[in-house]
Image 1: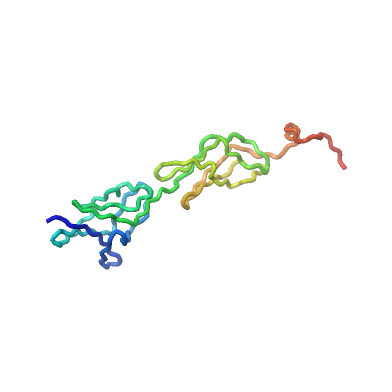
Image 2: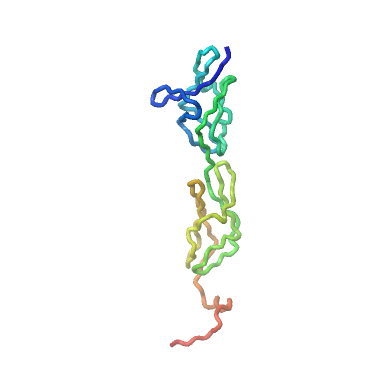
Length: 195
């Protein structure tokens, strides 16, 4: 006898329900890239060409493309002997895992009211699968108008509902001093009288 087809059945609330792969409801449907498919809750029935069926033990099922799930993957193939069935309904995400900061600020001295210039810095988003993306021009800064005494601020980046933050420091914000205005040529007049 040869095996004719493989059926997947699920036992929700102790009722036996025969389902096809399009209607199947898995116990675990959401995965992070790199995880292994979990068949918990599934039962596999192998039917021979004479109509006789037998329970296929989960340990005897090979899950093709289920060992290391990939971003965007929506199904795995369950293989028993020479039979295959597609199990659909899974979602594999590649969430943001951290932000990294490299380089150093080109401009380090600021006056009140100025915005931080990120030139010289690279802010990188690192994802669960270790892929990365430069997000320097996409971050949100915790302070947009610098003030006296500020020496650090937070840059944040959100992707698919996950937000990560990194601290930026290495700059100073000082009061405007008259001698600085004289050096810059901003003041044309240097003598003033009271009254």
